[in-house]
Amino acid sequence: MPAQIITTDELRDFKMELLDEIKEIIQARTQNKEWLRSSELRKILKISPGTLQNLRVNGTLPYTKIGGVIYYAHEDVISMLEDNKVDNSL
Image (cartoon, rainbow, N blue to C red; front, side, top):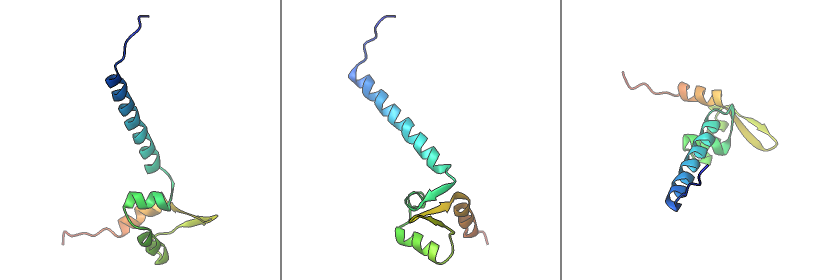
C-alpha cells in the first residue's frame, strides 16, 4: 500500500468535519433524552433560570427532584408547549 502525503490544510479540514459530526451526535442525544436537567431545558427553550423557576412554582411544568437535581420529563415539556400554544387564526 503506497504512502499518501496529507497536507496541513487537509488535516485541518478533517478535524473540522470530525468536530461538526461529534457536535451533531451530542445534540441528537440531548434532543432524544427522556429526562432533561434544568440547564439543558433552559438552553433548549432559551429561557432564564428565573423563568424556569416560575414555570415550576406556578405548576405549569411538572418536575422531579432527586438529590438536589431537578429533572423534567421530555413529554411534560412538549405537553406544556402544546397546552400554551396560541392560535392567532381567529
